[in-house]
Structure formats: structure tokens, C-alpha cells
Image (cartoon, rainbow, N blue to C red):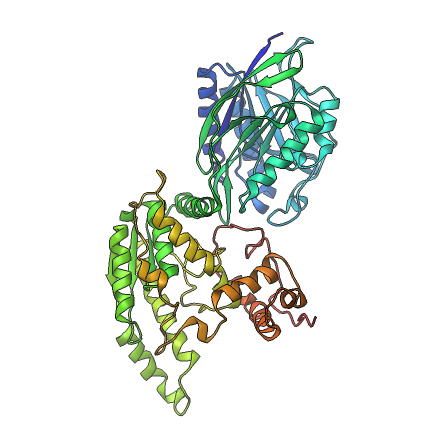
Length: 556
């Protein structure tokens, strides 16, 4: 019987579908643990196949590949510490979300996830079947060996599974997670795990994966709690990290020795870090290396350029200004200044001649009709055409730059400024875009690849927002001021509030009804929009799934 137990926590970044690559990352982490004298190396939930796989997990060939890689991994990690890793498990006609503990070339323990989340971005009831609650596994062959419970992610958000494991003899809980980011989520996780520790009176290890996967960002932030909720170890956010944690057996039970305790960043930093990581991983995991975007001289494209430069490095970002007769000199100057500050390439492609040709081509059909939204959209679609042509020619992924306020009310042109492969600010309301710009100008971190200092010229932040598609145009011509718009949208979208709730909060009913109408009729645009990182609990896509055809309106 040993009175010490060393655990290696591997907070790593898997890639969905790269089963062999993920297994190799696990083996390298196991080697690190073995070199550090660890008794066990722990990896996150579903690490072997990546998370979330969505329906890919149901392909029989995918399952067979995962099973084969797991067996190979067990053989490769036979001589050394135990290895805990998440992956799929087929049992007859049931597919499980499972956690395997490998030792001496074999699987010595398999835990099956009991609580399958079926809300927000999760569809696990669609994919997996639950099994009975399980007890702990023993780390050795003698009666005094440490017994460990491994509740999987959601299983630790409720008392049942953890209590069952401890009642069956677990002296420690290791919780492997694939918990995606949303703003302020860490405090929610921590409070839940403190509750489990308080109820079960054993130490708890919370290991979360890190990295971007489509719209979701896994932010790491793994930690270790001792009895009574005392924090022993806090790992960093938004970066891969490995921590070796020593547990000591005392008369009162097992206790984790204190280790590094990283400080939690504020929500401006976590939002920005999530956007940077999401773009960086989306590019790396899809095989793209360079991006381009239309740089208009406005605040949205300026912050997207900064995110791209921080994620990929300025040398991998190209900005294109595409002026028309409505583009102001100030916008030309501001766009050029933003590109220069970031150190990215800046090109100018005027659209005047193309617009004149399109106008002339359509003139026989449009004769006698007033100019209006159609002509404004033509300009946007010309820009989309020219940007996509450059994307195809140079192999650069086109980024879109619409914020959540615009995405919500359809203040964007489908096949125009909505064209592109990824939208880093899709879940960022316009008022928060301004806040993030100011934050980035005042802050720099080692993980940012662009320079420190004022990356978004103050002139861009201070000027009234405008699409510049007609003379003297301002966004406020078509929409309420953004503080009003965002306040209403936060209620309608994020809080699922009624029209009456919005009115009670002080907003004009006619304005609320207009925004509600725009929100519902813009669903078809969102259905065709580029993906972007989830920053809130009501991001457009999996968090909020509404029909395109919908004639219901709230008359309260």
C-alpha cells in the first residue's frame, strides 16, 4: 500500500477525426508522466476521437478505427503509469461515451457516461446510450490500494453519480471533461465541483480539454480541489498544459499538495482569447494557413483583422479595401492605418468600374425604378465576388466580419459581406465589439502574434458606424442606436424574454416589435452564414435553433 499518488493532468487539444494523431498526443503525454514518476496520466473526455464528433461517431468504420487505436495505445503504454482516456465504446446495439483506464497493455477499467447532456450545443441522447451507474476502480492489487471514481463531465454536475462512486469506495474523483466555453462559465463549473467535494468529502480533479472545434472553444482551466472545496491546483486557460499533482494519504483521507494556481482572466480577455483560439484552430485543423478580409475602415473589420493577426501572425493576413464613390476619405485613411499598425498586407481594389458595368447591364430591366436597397446590395455582392475570387486564386480563407447585432437583424447582405469561411465575431454584439477594441488596444499577451499598442485606431472606434453604401449613410438610419438594439436583442435572444418583458425593461414597444420582426425574418440568412466561435449561451446555430418559415409573433 502506497501513501503517495502522483497524477499527471494532460490538458491537451485533440482534433476531431484525427484518431491516430490524438492517440500519439496521448502517448507523448504518457511519456511525460512516466518521466515525472507519475502513477497515472489523465486525458479529457472523448480525447481519442476529439469532441464533439456529432454524427461522425455513428459511422461503424469510425468506431472500428477508434477501437483499434485504443488497443494500440494500450500496447504502446504498457510499461509505465496508468493512462486514462475518453473514447467511444460499442456494446451490442448501444454506443457509449466511455472513459478507459489502460495499464500493462490492457483496459483495466471502463466507465460509461450516465448523464447525457441534451441541451444547448449538446445532442448526446441522439448519439449515445446511458448505462448503469458504476463504482470506482482500484489502482493496485492489494486491499489498501487507492480506489478512484471517474464520473465523466456531466456526471459530475449532479450529485448522483459521484455519490454512488464514493459510497462504493472511491477515495478520489477524477472528472474528464469536454466542457465548451461561454462567458463566465468557469465560476459555474467551480461552484458545481465544490458542491460535489462538499457532498462526497473526497478530493476532486477536474480536467478539461482545450482547443477550437467549429463553433465551440474548449478553454481548459482545469483544477484540483481538496476536501471542503480548497483549491490546490489551477491550470491556465486557452493553452495546452501538463501538470503533475501529488496526493498524500492522511488520517483524514487523500489530500492534493498545493501546486501552481493561475489567475482567471477577466471576460474581455477570455472572449478575445476564445476568438483567437477558435480561428487559429479552425485554420490549422482544416489545413488553411492564410486569411483575407475586406477592411472597410469600420470597427468590425478592424477587430477581425486584429484577431486574425493575433491568431495567425501578421504575415498570414491580407486586408483588402474596396472603395466605391461612397467610401469616405476618413475610411480610406483609417483602414490603411489599421493595416499598418498590425503589420498586415494591405491592398486596394476599387469597385467603381465593376459597379458601373453591372448597373449598365441591368439598366434595361431597372429603367424607371428608383435606386434603393437593390443598388446597395449590388455593391456588397461585388465586394463578395472580388474577395472570393482572390480567396480562390491565392488559397486564402475569406473571413466575414458581421457582429451578432447585425447577424441577429439581418443587417448584412447574403452572398455579399456574408460570403466567407469563418466569422470570428459572430457571437459578439456591436457594443461589445467597441469594448473589445478598447481592451485590445490597452492589453497585449504572449499568445498574441500581432504587436502591442493601438491596433484599432481610435478614429475607427469613435466614428458613427456606417455601411457607406449611399451618401451620408449611418447604421442608425435603419436601426436603433446600438446600445438600444443590443439591449433588446439580449432580452429577446439571450434571455428568451417576451415583448412585454422588453417593454417593462424600458424599451419602446414599436421598436421592440420591429426588432422582433427583423430577428425572425433573418433566420434564412443565419442558416447560410459562416460559422463562428460561441461566446455566450445563446450563440446562433446549435444554441438557438429556430425554423426559417415562422409566422408566429409575440403579441404581449
